[in-house]
Image (cartoon, rainbow over all chains, first blue to last red):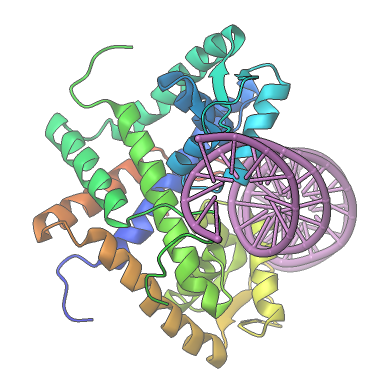
Length: 157
Length: 157
DNA sequence: CTTATGTCAGTGAAACTGATATTG
DNA sequence: CCAATATCAGTTACACTGACATAA
């Protein structure tokens, strides 16, 4: 570990802190709608891409299928998500938002947007663009998601 | 919602995703040491500032005292943390790392540094500095942590 | 009396691992 | 047989709220 101008460790901390505050504020904003942050994230993802499978949802949230399934089933029981009766090619089950959910997600998105807007308020346009770019780069730099258990080339350990 | 050049919502997503991947990778890196990410964060904070109280630890992690106490007690039971017998001015109890913990945290830090370094690898020096600055700005823009229930509006710290 | 601390008790959402069945 | 899906079962770390006692 030589000399770094900008310590990478510091970035790790800041990502964690920023996400912690963001998560707390989002949770507060979503509570009146009876939604948790993971639930909202799941719904929002479904709005952006209807008909997605739970496995794909899990990949995008960087969690296991089993974890995502808990959230997804909870949402289905609340009538916010429908799951296709007819499995697809690979036994896939496709999820979609219900009309009630679409309305709810709209309101949730407004509230969340208020939080994120406030968070990025002090940044100028260029700074915002740079932040988006840098965060995407960091996300991709850490490579593949986490599989189910097997099937994952052992990197180094 | 309006059309902005750089959507603030996108930043929220990226913060979440980046943190999710980072958290996953850190968890994998720390598992061989039998440490969870929150545990490591707690230990690292204690190394940086020995003698800190659990309430202060909680504030920095943006969680409640009760939540932090669970982590802290777990670490104490494992002999990684000592807690002062003599309460301070305000009934405070000060925590410190044990020698065993110091050694463990060293190894943990190396592993974590490997992850964060990999994460920021594609960025150049200027980009890293800009990211640090922007993240700190975002974190601070969302204001104070969450107290215990009452007592907010404490701007100085 | 007010405030900050530590603590006990309970709850809950959501992550994990492991195993199994099914389909292409 | 292999790969990817869905699912069931169990565990766990860790967040929350609420309530209480204590000390400055």
